[in-house]
Image 1 (cartoon, rainbow, N blue to C red):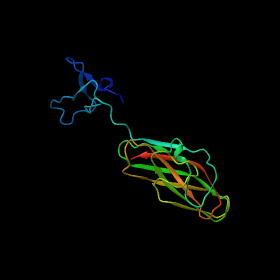
Image 2: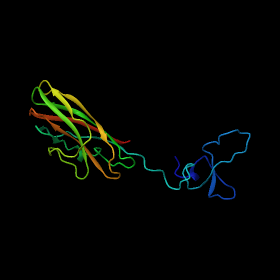
Image 3: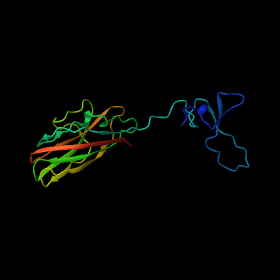
Image 4: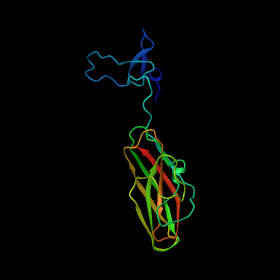
Length: 196
């Protein structure tokens, strides 16, 4: 889309004032037997909206892919450290409503292991891999069960939050807990974050 009326194919400069012209993007409604006039806009307006500045920034959407994370041996919630990776952070600019999806695979070194994955986000410095659970919840905890050692299971955490501060960067991450112990391996982690 052109960034000014004067660059638009639908704009026709006025003969007596080249700084203004008729915007012919939308034909006037009504009976064509009557006389109609096209809206007059300035050469630096935007597409019939009568604004001299560009429209508001589009709402952001980001995605990321995490490199393989170190295996973790945890019982209590422990952060995976994704918030430090490009594509796992977003800055709301218009509504403060962020939707989030983080998915990946998980395995355990022990049979009959329960693995809990919880979505968390926050502002400021993102926690590193292995740090204690921190941040605000953005999703309900997902519970997974590995019936045999080294089973590979897919996981997806869906959620988000509303009322988030505008223009404040947020990191998004997951915490992992394995109440029965064992070594938990999280891999193939991907994110999709977007403002609604």
